[in-house]
Length: 237
Image (cartoon, rainbow, N blue to C red; front, side, top):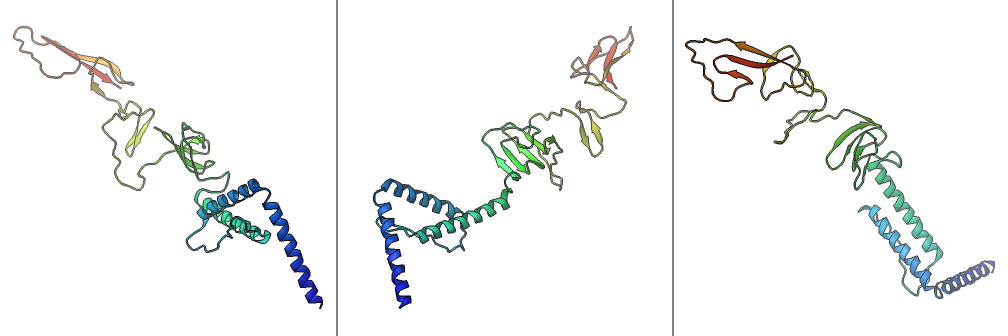
């Protein structure tokens, strides 16, 4: 008898709860609409995190039917599990919050700061590479770092435009200044009226034969004098 009474009390309590839920849902259609809208958005976001092997289904509701608290709570529990799965997947791809392994912005000029650039590849607080519309910058934290290209081999092809070096160019045989001239003491013929940076001007003059002089010159020549006598301009370092 006690068991029957307890069962009846439980049925009465459920009926009261059902009546309360109906009373809350029917006079407030706007709140009901917002509830189902939020529920739909939650299902949509959670669907992005589900893999093909995820089989857990959310409880769906239709208009006019009561929404049991246990079913709503089960839906939110499942959504939380899906969000956790999505968070784990994102952290595996880009790192945890504050230590992301990259970012993409619409427009941002790249500089030595670790978080600058339209695209950042690597840890924004460690070694990374930043890119914008026309620049590439390697960084270590907030300092400029070395950018390596083709370190494992293979050719590097640069188009037909001009290659400008602002600083020092180093190869396997040595380093060169921005003038692109190798180090050492030597002279070159001057052409164009001035010497490259790092060179000094000089010349060599020949006093040629005066009486039977058959000097002649043609084509492109270095700076100098080419008549009865000959003088050539040099640039030396």
